[in-house]
Image 1 (tube, rainbow, N blue to C red):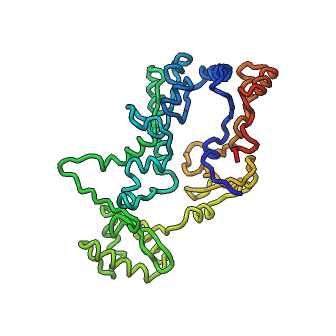
Image 2: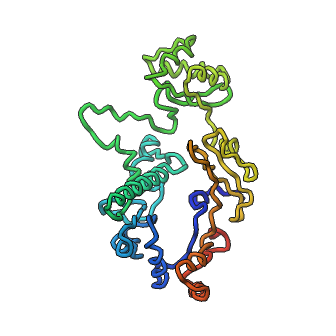
Image 3: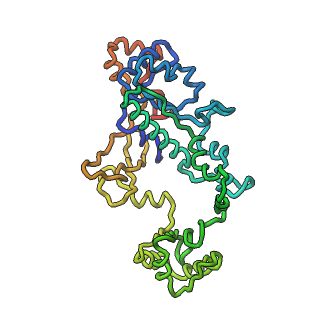
Length: 357
């Protein structure tokens, strides 16, 4: 079996402790960690934080400099009817209208991408919020809440469609299941042996494009006619021909491929990892990952710093792996730790495998 797991990537090289926050003893152990903590990241609604006693006010009584990064589905600065509801990417895409926009209408809703359209954006928003909170703390203002949510990210990318004002261009964004792009010079086309995406910057590359397709007699004043002309011409030659034509003019021409095909093309095995690979997107296959499955993870070389080397993080630990180690550092004796484990207040695992089957 092969896994491609987000948590296997995001939890690499981290220590892991399992404890019961609902028990007085577990809560007390948790609070012992707070004085040495800069940021707590938690995926929970306001209602859940209240029940666990993890509000900023409660946390700041122990560590006034602590930053609480809160992420949930429908949360925000004001309380609404869904504020405390659980949710995930697809639900919030539907809630905010992204699916109906992308699919072309209420009768044909479509999920926008599979890799988490607002999951990923929401994470970036949370990271940005933490950065702002750290700067604010450095100015002497203490800890604060750094908040993000799926619905906030969904609304952020819907902003262009929320406001009406004088001189606003029409909302004529192409949408629907048959749409291939924005216009004739920014869309998918079929060559004789596959599909590619053409991207012409009209401000800087238009003349170069016209020179590249000079024999085609393209009439750019009529978008429909231009598309028809290009469709017929592109189908007559293989993709590599058009890649060479447009590469010579510095015009984007990208073959379309499945994500699985791209992954296999840039996949490195754990015994032959080259972090200086020229590819900006690469994957590493851990055939003998300690979780018991083969795991494919995104390689950490998409960004290459000039004055620092790229390091490969260790594997994600099984949840609870470092429970004893962390508790010893908190002053618990080995006997105390075993008693806590026997009482179910702390644990060294929550399943035989990394996650419950």
